[in-house]
Image 1 (cartoon, rainbow, N blue to C red):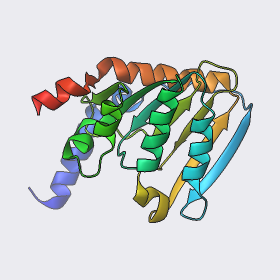
Image 2 (cartoon, rainbow, N blue to C red):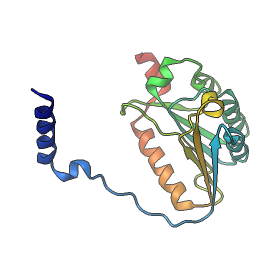
Image 3 (spheres, helix red, strand yellow):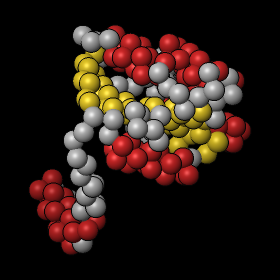
Image 4 (cartoon, rainbow, N blue to C red):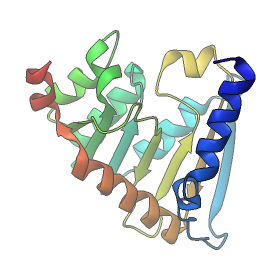
Length: 192
């Protein structure tokens, strides 16, 4: 089939699909409240800002990571757990099993529950929820993978939202939805 013919065939196929196939449900709007801190690496020290939030954790830390190679952030999660903070991690299975410099095995060794996301082509979320059920909780999100490259080599962004309980709840609900579909680390590793 010629290139124009193939393009026409794809266009016709798309026109025949129901509109709902490309119309996901819109997210619920949330009122602006609390504070917003915006950082851009490598110019801003995004990792230092994340460490301040993690070191202030009192109840819980929920992490979703595509890549997690930062020794400093891993140490902060282990320290939080040692202080009695509930720490749980979700990570992309493929990136974790490649294993190059991944800190996930270290987190598991430290007794932090880790589950690997297997449902998606890429579990590309990059979030940390700190004290998500508390009024002073924080969402850390952005393009920033938890890696040295994100800190020093890449152009990345980090947004830290504090004091917006509906946003924290939405992120925690999403984290729990992903956790329900994820595979415990030990299971995923034995299947590898």
